[in-house]
Length: 96
Image (tube, rainbow, N blue to C red; front, side, top):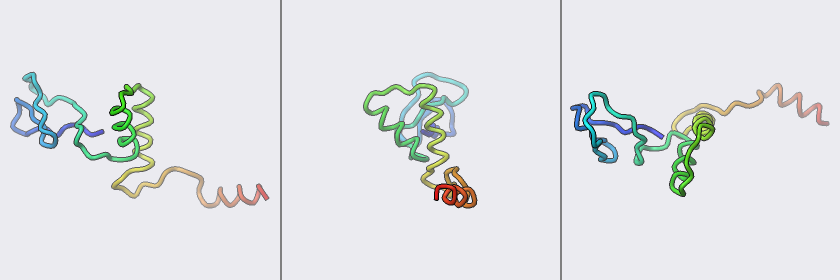
């Protein structure tokens, strides 16, 4: 998920996407996952769904979320890693 987009004026910090106001005065903007931020890929979507049903994320969940976002982004042309065409042809020929 993406962090809140804070107002550039400084404290009090208010997210420009979801309207959340950070309750404590701090010099630097806080880090907070914005619930209204658009998903960057499949990993963000799965993270939002699991959070909605009450599953708490662990370290493995965060790694998996990053990998899924890399492999299946919503606004990019990145292709998931896999065998190249030459390797696939060799595997097909060996299987016959």
